[in-house]
Length: 189
Image (cartoon, rainbow, N blue to C red; front, side, top):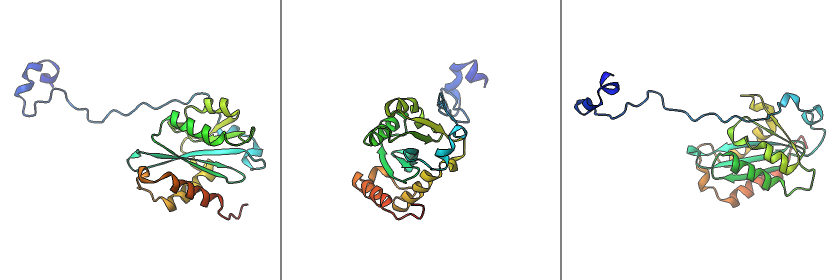
């Protein structure tokens, strides 16, 4: 320790000759703070009870080695599913994908979106402004609070098993999976 701190000229005589000692624990990326979050606990009852359409849930499905991800959107009442393939799990790509997929619907067809607390959802205010909607966030580690999208993620995993490399999945395949999910008979409907 003395040599590394006080006498750098002696480093060359050490058996391993490291210029700089490696930290025991690697540095982790700083957590992204999501500002102006509205808790799911403040979400109105008519949304919770699925009495009104045009309320959405969003989630991400990660690929092997986190090379590519899927953004999955589902409408809470009608169970309409949209799947987008993204090149990375950053907030800008996620924001652009959500706006692109939901802006094809008529005005006021998006009233709210429920997210988890992942860093990919940091640009929710831009989405709210563009689509004129509200956003709600689950409590930390409570993914079951947006159960519809979690259930659809499980259905997607039937077609694309966990550990698969999403960079090798073609867009046509994702469109076919989306069509199968949207035409799937459901007891709740």
